[in-house]
Length: 209
Image 1 (tube, helix red, strand yellow):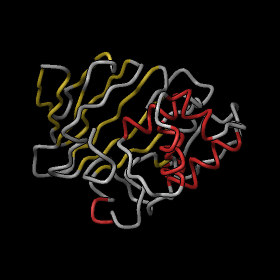
Image 2: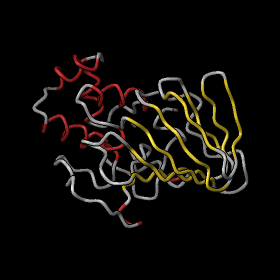
Image 3: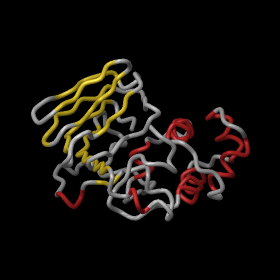
Image 4: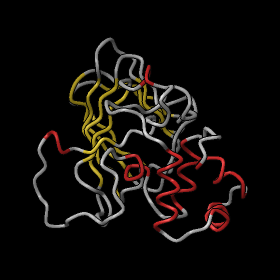
C-alpha cells in the first residue's frame, strides 16, 4: 500500500482530518502522545506531528499506531466514526448504511483521487470476528507499489470487471466469478488492469483492515 499522500485507497465522501481523529481516539483512550508512541514503537515526536497534520504518514505507519490503541484501519477511517461500541443487535443494513472506510480521505488537497477506490464495510467490525466489504476499483486504480499486510485471512469474489492480485511472489488476474483466499500477513496488492470498474465482495477475519 502506498503512502497516503499518493494514489491509494479512496472513497466517495470528502477527506477527513486525520490529525484531529487520531487526537480524539488517543484522548478517549486516556493515552499520552509519549505513551502511544512507546506502544507503537515510533519516535516520540511523530504522534504530535501527525495530530498537527505536519506529517503525511504511510498506511503502514498509521496501522502500526492504531494496532497500539488498538483500533482497526476500517474503524478509524469510517465516515461515521464514533468511539462508542456498536449495537450488536443490528442485523440488516441498507445500501446507504454501508460504512465508507477509505484511508485516502486524509487531506483536502487529495480530491483528485477520491473516487479511485471505494471500500464500503457492512456494519461496525468492532466486537465482531468478521469484516465484510463491498469494493470498487476504477480503471487503473492501485492499492500502491508498497504491498500491504495485516493479521488476518481474507477472501473475495469478483462480481464484475478484472483485478490483478499480487500475493507475495504470485500474481493472478481475476474476472467475474473468480475468487481468492490468502493469508493477509503475506504482502499483497490490488490493481485494476481493465477498462471498466472492478467490483469485489470480500471478507476478512479477524477484522484487521
